[in-house]
Length: 133
Picture (tube, rainbow, N blue to C red):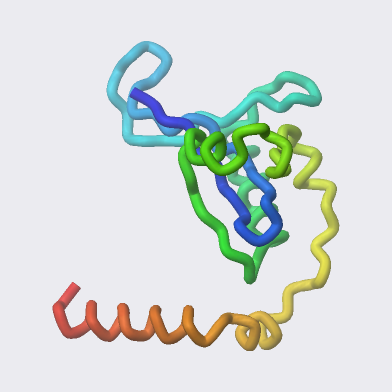
């Protein structure tokens, strides 16, 4: 059993393929759920394991402060049926070669978090603390 997922930046409309999430190995034996990676369109190698972790890490740094969602592949087809609006990243180097700009600044990034988000999270944390988990 497997499902295809992507990391979507709602603000920039950039999409990073996470590959399939599967609970069976190549021999059909049960394994814990894991991301199996994706084929790099520049050279055909499978981006997986440590390389997948590195590209996701870089995507997160490049998109910090923005709204990110992990979504199934079908969702992308629903919101962009022509495939022309979303920028689908299909090569490891596309992400790894992007400059981190601006450089991280925690104070600026804290100030940029919308009040509504902070308020919603504070209420959710308070509710969870009261209910015990």
